[in-house]
Length: 91
Image (cartoon, rainbow, N blue to C red; front, side, top):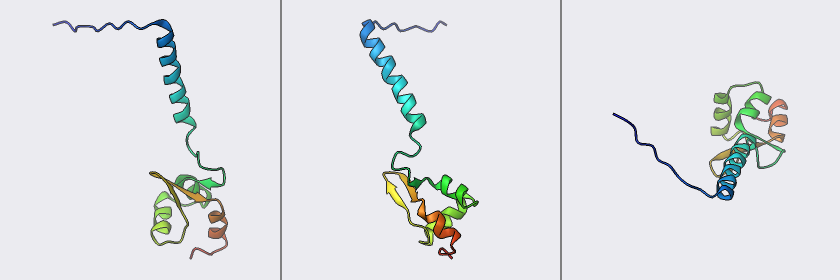
């Protein structure tokens, strides 16, 4: 049993634009870790900064001890929260 192959014809300029768009999307995906502001951390970055697990971050967040900001589905933490943690203000 043979597999039929599909053949598409594209004008070269349209193919080049499509190829460039795919490459651009791949580059954006790789660099989109923190697009909000350099003064904010992702949950994993925050956990690493306080030398704790992601679970500990989730615990602090659920207890309302750490300030978070939501952008769509993403969560960000102000860098100032790391200082608050080390100053003992989150206990």
